[in-house]
Length: 216
Image (cartoon, one colour):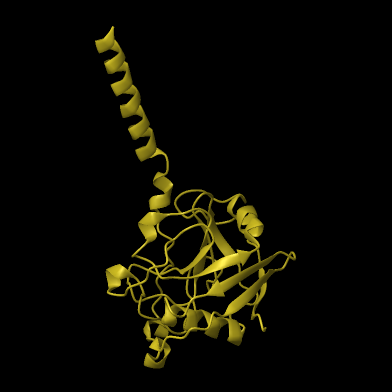
């Protein structure tokens, strides 16, 4: 009887481990942007590497009225923050869309085409561990990070917001900020219908009316 109980316990444990390993394979899909052959390979300026103690805050307003507020961390990822703020100040993000969503993973937006292709006219060094940069911000729920192609130095403005934690992105993508309010809108977008794997393109794409810097 004791041996039978041991056998049943072992089987249950093996099933739990198997279930855990197979429960979220979709999270292995990276939030990449499609590569384009343009001047977007230009790197950011060295002056952006100067760290600051300031914490910029931005407000993303959706065309339907939803508001997502975020804070940025230049002390963690200065180049990434500078690139994103350039897009904000220039109005680049106004009228862009969230084009991709995977529930339990992330929502992605900011492409020039609205389909995941292209970004702003410069690309920056990837600020993450596998690219030789010490970035300690983990990809937890609400964290803001930059999308890229297979080239580690190709981020050019597309960004994604984590719907749930995805540790496999830590050290491989440049996290640089976090949502401080409005996660309910991230939740809504993450649950919207998509074309499914592999593109996970949203069928109806929420429009970003504007992103502005919040002035104190």
